Structure formats: C-alpha cells, structure tokens
Length: 547
Image (cartoon, rainbow, N blue to C red; front, side, top):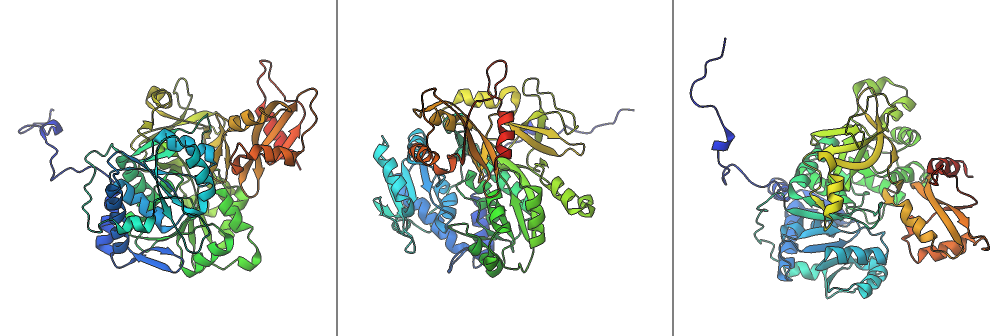
C-alpha cells in the first residue's frame, strides 16, 4: 500500500543560502572561538614566554593588518621560513587573515630549491628567521623577482638580519582590533604547500579553507584533543601546515608548546614541566626518545598520546615507546590531502594481544579518517579495489573534502593526479582482512627520511653528473635515527678511478640539501631486467644487508 503524502515534498533547490544560514568554512574562526571562550588561558608556551589566547588573537590581527599595510592583497603569496616558534603559529592564522596565501617553507631546503619555490609561487613577502641568513642570502641573490623580507630576530640565537624590517616592527604597524572578514568562498586557497619533489621539481599544492577546516576537526577528533590538552611541537609546522594541527589544537582551546629544536633532553623536560598530553613524532623523533641518553631520560607523570607519521614506526619502537609511558597511534597522510587521511584506529581486542603482535597491528597505516568519505586501495588502471587478502598490491586512492584543489600552474599534473575521479597517491599497499591498509612500497621509489620525502631520481641525476660515474641507482636503506636514508649504487666509467666517498660527498653538498645525501656508496654493477631496467627491489635487499 502506497504511503499517503500531504503537501509539497521538501526540495533543497527551493531553499536559499543566506547570511543567516550559510557561511564559508574556514579554520580562522577557531582563533576567535578560543579567544572568546578561553581568552585568559595560556594558549602558547615558548621557554619562559606565556601568551594567552586573547593576546595571540591580538598578535595575529596585528600581523594581518601589518601585511595589508605593506601592500599585501588577497591572493598574494606570503612565504614563511621559521622554526617552531610562536611567530610560526601566528602566521598560520595571520597570513590568511590578511587574505593572503601562506607558503610555509621547509628549513632544510637548499638555496636552489628556495629560489625555485619562491619564483614559482611569485611570493611577495618572505618572513624568515635570522638563523637561516646564509641560505636565504644566497637564495635572494639568485632570485629574479623582487620580494620584501621580514626578519624574525631571536635575541638568544645568532643570526643576521637581511630584510627591511623585523617581525615585531611589522606587528607594531598593525591594528590589534582590525576587522577580519571571513573568506567569501571556502574554496579559496588558504595555503600553498610544496611537495618534496619526489617525481621531479617540487609541486605547489593548493590547500583551501574548506579542506583545512574539515581536516583540522578530523585531526582533533583523531587525537582526542580537549581544552586541557597540551601539545608539544616536534613536527615542523612548515610540513603541510603542521598537518593542520595549529588549527586543530586552537579549535579545542588547548595549549601549544613551541620548540625551536627537537632535542631529547629538552623534549623530556618539557613533557614533565608543561604536563604535555600530546605530540606528533616522525620516526626520527621517536627513535631519538627511545635511544636518548640516560641522563636526559625523565619519568612521565602522565601518559602522552603520540601521533606517528611519515614512515611507519617499527614494531620495536612502538613497544619501547609504550614501555616509557607513551601511547602511539600511527597516521598516514599527504600534503595533497591537507595532512592526515588514515590512522591505525585502535581496537579493544588489540589490548589482549602480546606486545609485539599489538605493535604490528598498530604499525599499519589503518583506516580512513572520519572526514575522508572515500578511500580505496585499487588497481591504478581499472580502479577496481583489491581484495582484503593482505597480499594483492594496489594504489591508495582518496576522494572527498580534504583533497587539494590542485597543483599551482600545473593542470597536466592535476589531471593526472585526479584520473578516474580519484586522487592517486602513488603509494602501493595491501588491505588486511579487517579492512586495515598497510603500505608496502612507493610507486616512485620515494625515500622517507626524517619525515621528509627524497626523490631517488633526483639524487641519481646529480650523481650521474659526476665525471667518474657512468650509472647510478639510489634506494632506501633502513636507519635507526632517520627511518630511511639514501644508499647509492654506482657504476664507474671504464677509465675512471674510484672516487673517495668523503670527496664525493663534498661534491654532492654543492648541489643537494644535506638530508638528501647518500649515507653509503656501493661500487660495482647494477642488476637489471631483460628490458634494461634496474632491479631496485634487489638493490634494496642489498642495502639492508650492508654492515
């Protein structure tokens, strides 16, 4: 029997979006909420410095107003090269509050890469810490277009000012009560994050206000952030906007603890003194804590939740961290997804497993975040999902709110990444019977060192420019500190003498950032397939067996 209906059916097309019922999503509003609700509470700690949420809002408004006074207009790129200090947190809000697009730069980049990024982004302003003066000076000398430099001067740090004014002078020029209109379109860019150039030159990933808002809330949910949460910054805020955690912690009204350098003694002291509840650690940070000297080790007064990203932490590291009082959750993400997209959501049944087995379950990349509506591991050509057999390889693909808008000035790469209506991550994985994903390989042989991606192709191309080298193949080699480091296998020209490794490193340092340098050189022949392609799977096995 058909159900009787009265009146007209509800049709959303008949309803209007008006000011009363619609506003563009943006994480910038989290700052107002934190300042309105917890204005007198400490929002940021840096050494002896304590700043309330009300003061942080005033400083962010000053920054936005000061940038507009310099001539920064909506859509302009403001690049930022800073460590994890309060100014870096303020830039996550103040730059987009000015209507500009935040371009946070990795402080491990060499001058040539800085020039390439600043030029490609057409940045109008560079806010930089004076400790980076040598590499910034070299980049500025080679940069074609004009750029206004603002120096962050830390009295406790050595460095040279290169710009026209200091960061504090810029804030002094701003208005702490300046109006901050929300973006009219949530699709508009909030940040421009550059990849590590694993498939060629770095690509500029355009992140928008909507994706940043949703991913920040997803991160807050994933970590269980609350108003009494205290987060220690060991993850660089320059890395994909700190995986949206600057906004997530603010959304919870928690406390940011800034740390210029992630040194083990300093980390443990802050964990205890500031009663830290959360931190994010790439494998090098976790290894640093596990293997820290006894004299700096401190007993934790409370459990600390650790979100581990980058390369997967080993089972042994997870076990050791748990024994020290840390609770580790492994997450997987990409710059193109605004940060975290998957995490190894703990199950109650895991608690009864032996420690090694529980650590193995936790080390997997896991399941999609609550704000990622669709994720699959599938054949990259047919888009057919792989079976949950823990054996069949497929590519991790994402679809939904937090996927990037696209690559700056690169429609071809954007179209390729979005082929078939999915974002193709380039990472190969399997799916276990319980639906949890485990990463197995990387399509482009990416080396993940200290949470940073290194293109093996880039290192190979540089090596092959050496006068003694005929062929080069670079693969990842496990490392107890960095997770992975490059290992170079070299074939020399027939009449060439073997170069001294130390001399070869000196030559490479002129062309590569220090973290991209191979830690081992192996001379000989390269195994190849019948079609002449290098067998990198075999080389990886050889690299693991090196003394």
